[in-house]
Length: 363
Image 1: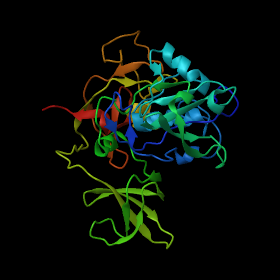
Image 2: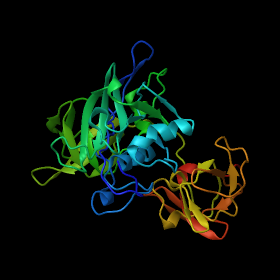
Image 3: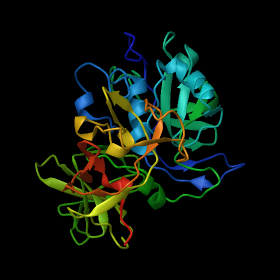
Image 4: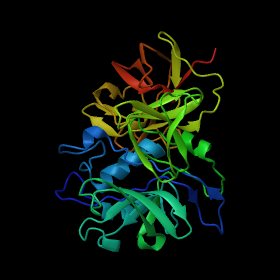
């Protein structure tokens, strides 16, 4: 797929999360979930580049977004067309090998396995069963049309390699569906593939009568996600025009839920990674809890450049890809529970950050 500095179109390979077993000779069985088309709706039309400089609806854009949204990894600068990803990753110290894992990136050099002869492909790995690897992808036209979501299986040797930026699953672990679901961020709307039979109900309650059933492998297109009656539910408008509900998993009991209040004093966790420069300011997609907007821009004055491990390092001038910490204590000015955002003042600028990356000041 083409990078923003070029003009052209590239196919995109991404992998859908499903029940996953990693190499039986060395690994424990692992389960995963098919995510479906979680690509941002506002990027599904129009022209331009995404938050990582990739052309919209191309393979690199879909993979960059999936890494950010699911793996919690923000792609550093320097990754251009898909064919360059494996080479760049190796130079930057990331592992690139022939062993796919859930959350890794399948990389196809120019012309490999029907990839574009000039731009190559990249993909996100969702499922590995022996020698079979399941991929989710955009702009791989298998009849559904260009610049659209698609899913398929390949043999693991058909890729040029697999890039391990921040895999979701350690192949020495035995991860259950409920454990993995906590790692995944289910989109608020999109497509969902069922891994087992689920009942459709008229109300989000287990006491509501079963109307019909989705079988394993069926796909539903939903527009709401709810947490009611101890379960996570998908909701959509059925063919009758009535809203329907499907319970997809039981919620784990929350112990001591975190609550923030205006005027409360918080401190930052970190370290965080710089995603973009904006004149004299910077932004971090991780700290913003998603692709940063102007509301998430930061005054770099109080920030401290660090190593990836949080140790003070560097020349204290922050560029994309650098790491930083935010020392000190900060007062919450405003809270938005729906987006899990809190507004605070860092240096000379008020900014919104994700409450996932702060903690209450110890008393």
